Image (cartoon, rainbow, N blue to C red; front, side, top):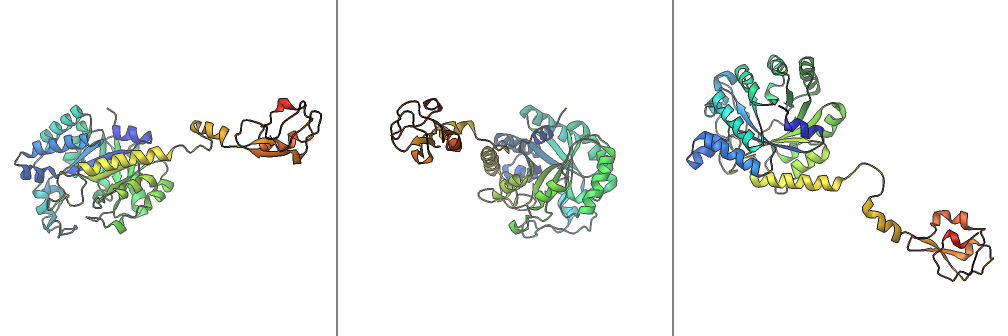
Length: 356
């Protein structure tokens, strides 16, 4: 099967990915429902908001983090100070659950994917999704990158907290094992990312340096009212945008505090569509809708005085007025020196058949 993410991106169409991650556990607890029900509810809300794909996170705490791994997020927002303890709260899903979610996504016609954080997950997710997502945290985990690249599917690669030589080395590994399109996602690995740290101009540099890749943006800023961060990223060249997704931004902890909700997603989709509509074509030519203006707002050569039949036309006999339905002022030198065939009244829009 083909990836809608990749198909849209290659066609230059905007792609919005809702990173549900493991936020459905908190939604389940809040609503008093099972995690699977909450996950499906979030998928449905994402689809209704116009989102093109949903992404989960697949891991087991025991294979992801050592028990003494410290936090790297804002502990005012997420109080857990151990990575292992945080991940342990949200690692109950395995193949069967993700298979059920993938089938549900197919029913709704929204693309399913999940970031794998271990070999087992990467292997069993193969049959469930059409692209692999490699987290910024695994950019230098080259054996794991190679393992996923060998799957032969397109890769979305986040490059948060990385330098150019690290990015290049990882891309070399991917390209040595995979010839499918790559989406390179600008990212700042800071939760949440202060607006002044978004560093969106980097997108322009990525487009220049990696012109053979699809450029995107994985966003960790808190949603701003006008969703200007995402719209700016799109305007600078990010075709694929990934952002955490929740149904309640007020929930404490995990990824709710910097996530978009369905209303934010609608603003993003509508805002980008408006931007796309006003950007138009790169071609330098007039629009068909300007034809009436070209004719009526431009000027023609007009007789400045009464001209008698047989008189030779001089510059002093001419002026230029609207509309542009007569001889263009650009052709004034062609008209000077010609002879009037008939009498021409002052303020007449001049045509070539009046002269010889």
